Length: 268
Image 1 (cartoon, rainbow, N blue to C red):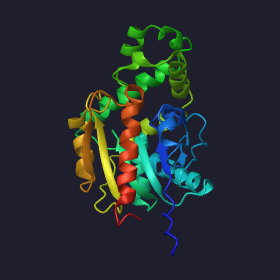
Image 2 (image 1 turned 135 degrees about the vertical axis):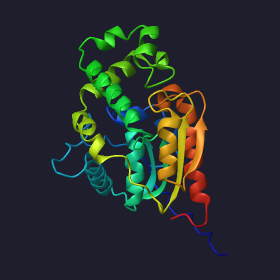
Image 3 (image 1 turned 180 degrees about the horizontal axis):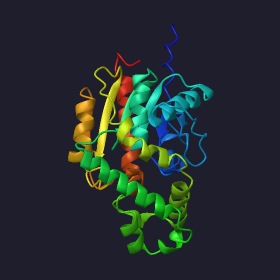
């Protein structure tokens, strides 16, 4: 009797966080993903616990992507199912452009805007967030659920669900993001994301229906125009960082996408 042919090894899942965050953003979804896939969640260059952002004349996002490629190489990862939130979603799409993606699932990805006014709005919000992160007693001020929800409303719809440890980690990450000034200062010259007409892999863009940081019509519709081959879904009940609001939904969204991609006969 001929032995059954073993299934080919699964591509790993790579998780990329947003600007001013760190790999800790994914802690709530790891227990659901790790039993089924190898998971690699690095901190991006210039972010807390991540590599230093290299100096250079190139666009800051390109330099972050350069480092992300090295991080994949060091982890022994050629291609992967790449999942990114916000800035991490933009980096995920750029990694696909470089041939490093088996698939891309971008959760409210940054990288596009409808007008200069929309870009100015983002710069104001991120500069205000960076200033909050530098206030030493801010985690203590955010111990009350109502105050926490107001302070972090652009991050999550239900920031009141965060534990004190998660709140402290969020503010530590903001304070530890050394790349933020360069990201903001270079936004006008380095963005928006260049269109990707042939991304070379399956792409799905998922947008939080309650995303107050990047409302869909102002920031999501331009992303879809830049990546016309992408599938699209809304995620209900979640804001800009959906792992805070509904980690079970995010984990299911990731697993369903990776598993259905693996089952397609023309998958890489």
